[in-house]
Image 1 (cartoon, rainbow, N blue to C red):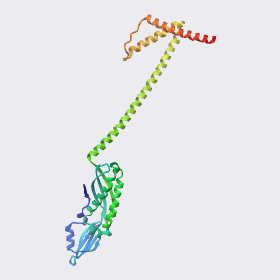
Image 2 (image 1 turned 45 degrees about the vertical axis):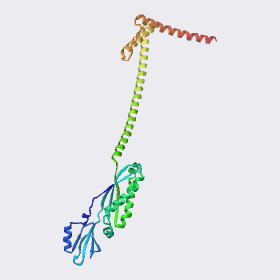
Image 3 (image 1 turned 90 degrees about the vertical axis):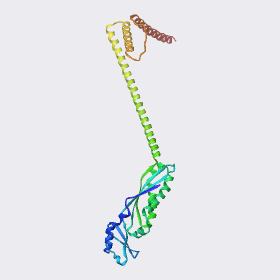
Image 4 (image 1 turned 180 degrees about the vertical axis):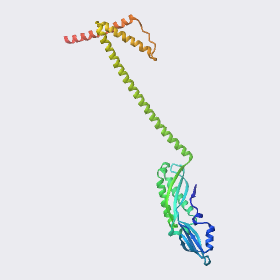
Length: 308
Protein backbone atom coordinates (compact mmCIF):
# COMPACT_ATOMS: atom_id res chain seq x y z
CA UNK A 1 0.00 0.00 0.00
CA UNK A 2 1.23 3.51 -0.64
CA UNK A 3 0.16 7.02 -1.37
CA UNK A 4 1.51 10.16 -2.89
CA UNK A 5 1.01 13.81 -2.00
CA UNK A 6 2.45 16.63 -4.03
CA UNK A 7 2.92 20.21 -2.90
CA UNK A 8 2.85 21.46 -6.48
CA UNK A 9 0.54 20.52 -9.31
CA UNK A 10 1.18 20.72 -13.06
CA UNK A 11 -1.61 23.30 -13.39
CA UNK A 12 0.42 25.86 -11.42
CA UNK A 13 3.55 25.33 -13.46
CA UNK A 14 2.26 27.37 -16.39
CA UNK A 15 2.90 30.63 -14.59
CA UNK A 16 -0.61 32.04 -15.35
CA UNK A 17 -4.22 31.18 -16.01
CA UNK A 18 -5.42 29.50 -19.19
CA UNK A 19 -7.42 32.61 -20.09
CA UNK A 20 -4.34 34.88 -20.05
CA UNK A 21 -2.34 32.29 -22.03
CA UNK A 22 -5.04 32.06 -24.67
CA UNK A 23 -5.30 35.84 -24.85
CA UNK A 24 -1.54 36.17 -25.30
CA UNK A 25 -1.59 33.43 -27.95
CA UNK A 26 -4.27 35.30 -29.85
CA UNK A 27 -1.99 38.37 -29.89
CA UNK A 28 0.90 36.22 -31.21
CA UNK A 29 2.93 36.62 -28.03
CA UNK A 30 3.72 34.47 -25.01
CA UNK A 31 4.56 35.70 -21.53
CA UNK A 32 6.70 33.31 -19.48
CA UNK A 33 6.92 33.86 -15.73
CA UNK A 34 10.01 33.80 -13.52
CA UNK A 35 11.42 30.33 -12.69
CA UNK A 36 9.43 28.93 -15.59
CA UNK A 37 10.24 27.91 -19.15
CA UNK A 38 7.90 27.43 -22.10
CA UNK A 39 8.21 24.84 -24.84
CA UNK A 40 7.57 26.22 -28.33
CA UNK A 41 6.49 24.02 -31.21
CA UNK A 42 6.31 24.72 -34.92
CA UNK A 43 3.63 22.78 -36.79
CA UNK A 44 3.48 20.26 -33.92
CA UNK A 45 7.24 19.72 -33.73
CA UNK A 46 9.58 20.87 -30.97
CA UNK A 47 11.27 24.12 -31.86
CA UNK A 48 12.72 25.93 -28.85
CA UNK A 49 12.63 26.53 -25.09
CA UNK A 50 11.49 30.03 -24.11
CA UNK A 51 12.86 31.59 -20.95
CA UNK A 52 11.15 34.14 -18.67
CA UNK A 53 9.81 37.22 -20.48
CA UNK A 54 7.60 38.12 -23.42
CA UNK A 55 8.14 36.22 -26.69
CA UNK A 56 6.69 36.62 -30.18
CA UNK A 57 4.94 33.41 -31.19
CA UNK A 58 3.08 33.87 -34.51
CA UNK A 59 0.37 31.28 -34.49
CA UNK A 60 -0.47 32.13 -38.06
CA UNK A 61 2.71 30.39 -39.26
CA UNK A 62 2.17 27.26 -37.19
CA UNK A 63 4.00 28.27 -34.02
CA UNK A 64 2.51 27.79 -30.59
CA UNK A 65 3.44 27.26 -26.94
CA UNK A 66 3.00 23.55 -26.21
CA UNK A 67 3.27 23.97 -22.45
CA UNK A 68 5.08 25.42 -19.49
CA UNK A 69 7.58 23.78 -17.16
CA UNK A 70 8.31 25.07 -13.66
CA UNK A 71 11.92 25.18 -12.52
CA UNK A 72 11.02 25.61 -8.85
CA UNK A 73 11.82 22.97 -6.27
CA UNK A 74 8.79 20.75 -5.76
CA UNK A 75 8.08 18.30 -2.96
CA UNK A 76 6.46 14.91 -3.26
CA UNK A 77 5.45 12.96 -0.11
CA UNK A 78 5.26 9.21 -0.67
CA UNK A 79 3.76 6.79 1.88
CA UNK A 80 5.01 3.24 1.49
CA UNK A 81 3.85 0.29 3.58
CA UNK A 82 6.33 -2.56 3.97
CA UNK A 83 7.45 -5.25 6.43
CA UNK A 84 10.62 -5.43 8.51
CA UNK A 85 12.83 -8.44 9.05
CA UNK A 86 11.09 -9.20 12.37
CA UNK A 87 7.70 -9.26 10.59
CA UNK A 88 6.42 -5.85 11.71
CA UNK A 89 4.40 -3.83 9.22
CA UNK A 90 5.45 -0.19 9.06
CA UNK A 91 4.46 2.80 6.96
CA UNK A 92 7.48 4.79 5.78
CA UNK A 93 6.84 8.38 4.69
CA UNK A 94 9.49 9.70 2.27
CA UNK A 95 9.67 13.34 1.22
CA UNK A 96 11.35 13.87 -2.17
CA UNK A 97 12.39 17.37 -3.22
CA UNK A 98 13.10 17.69 -6.94
CA UNK A 99 13.10 20.20 -9.80
CA UNK A 100 13.33 20.24 -13.58
CA UNK A 101 16.62 21.29 -15.18
CA UNK A 102 16.49 24.25 -17.55
CA UNK A 103 19.07 22.76 -19.89
CA UNK A 104 17.15 19.46 -19.95
CA UNK A 105 13.71 20.99 -20.44
CA UNK A 106 13.13 18.95 -23.62
CA UNK A 107 13.59 15.64 -21.72
CA UNK A 108 11.54 16.81 -18.73
CA UNK A 109 8.63 17.90 -20.95
CA UNK A 110 8.56 15.13 -23.56
CA UNK A 111 10.07 12.04 -21.91
CA UNK A 112 7.74 11.75 -18.91
CA UNK A 113 3.97 11.89 -18.82
CA UNK A 114 3.74 11.84 -15.01
CA UNK A 115 6.90 12.61 -13.06
CA UNK A 116 5.12 12.06 -9.74
CA UNK A 117 4.19 8.48 -10.57
CA UNK A 118 7.72 7.76 -11.80
CA UNK A 119 9.30 9.06 -8.59
CA UNK A 120 6.78 7.17 -6.49
CA UNK A 121 7.63 3.90 -8.22
CA UNK A 122 11.35 4.29 -7.53
CA UNK A 123 10.70 5.20 -3.88
CA UNK A 124 8.54 2.10 -3.44
CA UNK A 125 11.19 -0.08 -5.06
CA UNK A 126 14.07 1.13 -2.87
CA UNK A 127 12.18 1.18 0.42
CA UNK A 128 10.69 -2.26 -0.09
CA UNK A 129 14.14 -3.58 -0.94
CA UNK A 130 15.93 -1.98 2.04
CA UNK A 131 13.53 -2.09 5.00
CA UNK A 132 12.85 -5.89 4.90
CA UNK A 133 16.56 -6.43 5.65
CA UNK A 134 16.33 -4.51 8.96
CA UNK A 135 14.67 -5.03 12.30
CA UNK A 136 12.20 -2.44 13.52
CA UNK A 137 14.76 -0.77 15.79
CA UNK A 138 17.29 -0.69 12.95
CA UNK A 139 14.77 1.05 10.69
CA UNK A 140 14.47 3.89 13.20
CA UNK A 141 18.21 4.04 13.71
CA UNK A 142 19.21 3.83 10.04
CA UNK A 143 16.59 5.99 8.35
CA UNK A 144 19.34 8.25 6.99
CA UNK A 145 20.84 5.27 5.18
CA UNK A 146 17.41 4.44 3.73
CA UNK A 147 16.94 8.05 2.60
CA UNK A 148 20.42 8.06 1.02
CA UNK A 149 19.65 4.86 -0.90
CA UNK A 150 16.38 6.34 -2.19
CA UNK A 151 18.10 9.56 -3.21
CA UNK A 152 20.91 7.78 -5.07
CA UNK A 153 18.47 5.59 -6.98
CA UNK A 154 16.24 8.53 -7.87
CA UNK A 155 19.18 10.69 -8.94
CA UNK A 156 20.45 7.95 -11.23
CA UNK A 157 17.06 7.31 -12.77
CA UNK A 158 15.57 10.82 -13.02
CA UNK A 159 18.63 12.56 -14.47
CA UNK A 160 17.97 10.99 -17.87
CA UNK A 161 14.48 12.52 -17.76
CA UNK A 162 15.75 16.03 -17.05
CA UNK A 163 15.03 16.16 -13.32
CA UNK A 164 17.38 16.83 -10.40
CA UNK A 165 16.78 15.24 -7.03
CA UNK A 166 17.58 17.97 -4.52
CA UNK A 167 17.05 16.00 -1.32
CA UNK A 168 15.27 12.94 0.00
CA UNK A 169 14.12 12.65 3.61
CA UNK A 170 12.48 9.89 5.62
CA UNK A 171 10.14 12.09 7.62
CA UNK A 172 8.11 9.47 9.47
CA UNK A 173 8.12 5.76 10.33
CA UNK A 174 4.78 4.54 11.64
CA UNK A 175 4.55 0.94 12.93
CA UNK A 176 1.26 -0.87 13.27
CA UNK A 177 -0.95 0.40 16.10
CA UNK A 178 -0.67 -2.87 18.06
CA UNK A 179 3.12 -2.77 17.80
CA UNK A 180 3.22 0.85 18.96
CA UNK A 181 1.17 0.01 22.04
CA UNK A 182 3.45 -2.93 22.80
CA UNK A 183 6.55 -0.74 22.42
CA UNK A 184 5.05 1.84 24.77
CA UNK A 185 4.23 -0.88 27.32
CA UNK A 186 7.80 -2.22 27.16
CA UNK A 187 9.22 1.24 27.62
CA UNK A 188 6.87 1.96 30.51
CA UNK A 189 7.74 -1.36 32.20
CA UNK A 190 11.46 -0.66 31.88
CA UNK A 191 11.06 2.79 33.39
CA UNK A 192 8.94 1.42 36.23
CA UNK A 193 11.62 -1.18 36.93
CA UNK A 194 14.30 1.52 37.11
CA UNK A 195 12.05 3.63 39.34
CA UNK A 196 11.47 0.65 41.67
CA UNK A 197 15.21 0.00 41.92
CA UNK A 198 15.88 3.66 42.69
CA UNK A 199 13.10 3.68 45.29
CA UNK A 200 14.48 0.54 46.94
CA UNK A 201 17.97 2.05 47.00
CA UNK A 202 16.57 5.19 48.61
CA UNK A 203 14.75 3.10 51.26
CA UNK A 204 17.96 1.19 51.92
CA UNK A 205 19.91 4.40 52.42
CA UNK A 206 17.23 5.71 54.78
CA UNK A 207 17.28 2.50 56.84
CA UNK A 208 21.08 2.49 57.03
CA UNK A 209 21.16 6.12 58.05
CA UNK A 210 18.40 5.52 60.59
CA UNK A 211 20.30 2.55 62.06
CA UNK A 212 23.50 4.56 62.20
CA UNK A 213 21.64 7.36 63.93
CA UNK A 214 20.11 4.97 66.47
CA UNK A 215 23.50 3.38 67.14
CA UNK A 216 25.09 6.77 67.65
CA UNK A 217 22.22 7.84 69.90
CA UNK A 218 22.52 4.69 72.02
CA UNK A 219 26.27 5.13 72.24
CA UNK A 220 25.91 8.71 73.40
CA UNK A 221 23.16 7.67 75.80
CA UNK A 222 25.46 5.02 77.27
CA UNK A 223 28.24 7.53 77.65
CA UNK A 224 25.81 9.88 79.38
CA UNK A 225 24.58 7.17 81.75
CA UNK A 226 28.16 6.15 82.58
CA UNK A 227 29.09 9.73 83.34
CA UNK A 228 25.91 10.09 85.39
CA UNK A 229 26.76 6.99 87.47
CA UNK A 230 30.31 8.20 87.90
CA UNK A 231 29.10 11.60 89.08
CA UNK A 232 26.68 9.95 91.52
CA UNK A 233 29.41 7.74 92.97
CA UNK A 234 31.81 10.66 93.30
CA UNK A 235 29.15 12.72 95.01
CA UNK A 236 28.22 9.95 97.43
CA UNK A 237 31.84 9.34 98.34
CA UNK A 238 32.04 12.87 99.73
CA UNK A 239 29.21 12.37 102.20
CA UNK A 240 29.12 8.58 102.79
CA UNK A 241 32.40 7.25 104.10
CA UNK A 242 31.39 3.59 103.85
CA UNK A 243 31.88 2.16 100.35
CA UNK A 244 29.29 -0.53 101.03
CA UNK A 245 26.58 2.03 101.60
CA UNK A 246 27.64 3.88 98.43
CA UNK A 247 27.32 0.68 96.40
CA UNK A 248 23.90 -0.04 97.92
CA UNK A 249 22.65 3.41 97.01
CA UNK A 250 23.92 3.09 93.43
CA UNK A 251 22.23 -0.29 93.06
CA UNK A 252 18.98 1.14 94.40
CA UNK A 253 19.20 4.01 91.91
CA UNK A 254 19.77 1.63 88.99
CA UNK A 255 16.94 -0.56 90.21
CA UNK A 256 14.46 2.29 90.21
CA UNK A 257 15.72 3.48 86.80
CA UNK A 258 15.07 0.02 85.39
CA UNK A 259 11.54 -0.05 86.83
CA UNK A 260 10.89 3.35 85.30
CA UNK A 261 12.13 2.28 81.85
CA UNK A 262 9.99 -0.86 81.90
CA UNK A 263 6.90 1.17 82.67
CA UNK A 264 7.68 3.91 80.15
CA UNK A 265 7.93 1.78 76.99
CA UNK A 266 4.75 0.66 75.25
CA UNK A 267 6.28 -2.53 73.80
CA UNK A 268 7.37 -4.08 77.08
CA UNK A 269 5.72 -7.23 78.37
CA UNK A 270 4.39 -7.61 81.88
CA UNK A 271 7.21 -8.52 84.29
CA UNK A 272 6.52 -9.80 87.84
CA UNK A 273 9.41 -9.19 90.19
CA UNK A 274 9.60 -8.95 93.99
CA UNK A 275 9.45 -5.31 94.87
CA UNK A 276 10.18 -3.75 98.23
CA UNK A 277 13.03 -2.61 100.43
CA UNK A 278 13.94 -6.19 101.32
CA UNK A 279 14.12 -7.14 97.62
CA UNK A 280 16.45 -4.25 96.98
CA UNK A 281 18.57 -5.29 99.99
CA UNK A 282 18.76 -8.90 98.76
CA UNK A 283 19.72 -7.71 95.25
CA UNK A 284 22.46 -5.49 96.62
CA UNK A 285 23.74 -8.36 98.76
CA UNK A 286 23.81 -10.71 95.79
CA UNK A 287 25.71 -8.23 93.64
CA UNK A 288 28.16 -7.51 96.47
CA UNK A 289 28.72 -11.22 97.16
CA UNK A 290 29.34 -11.82 93.47
CA UNK A 291 31.97 -9.10 93.33
CA UNK A 292 33.68 -10.41 96.48
CA UNK A 293 33.74 -13.96 95.16
CA UNK A 294 35.18 -12.77 91.85
CA UNK A 295 37.86 -10.80 93.69
CA UNK A 296 38.70 -13.73 95.91
CA UNK A 297 38.90 -16.10 92.97
CA UNK A 298 41.19 -13.73 91.14
CA UNK A 299 43.40 -13.32 94.23
CA UNK A 300 43.54 -17.08 94.83
CA UNK A 301 44.52 -17.77 91.25
CA UNK A 302 47.32 -15.23 91.45
CA UNK A 303 48.64 -16.76 94.69
CA UNK A 304 48.61 -20.23 93.17
CA UNK A 305 50.59 -19.02 90.20
CA UNK A 306 53.05 -17.28 92.51
CA UNK A 307 53.54 -20.50 94.57
CA UNK A 308 54.20 -22.48 91.41
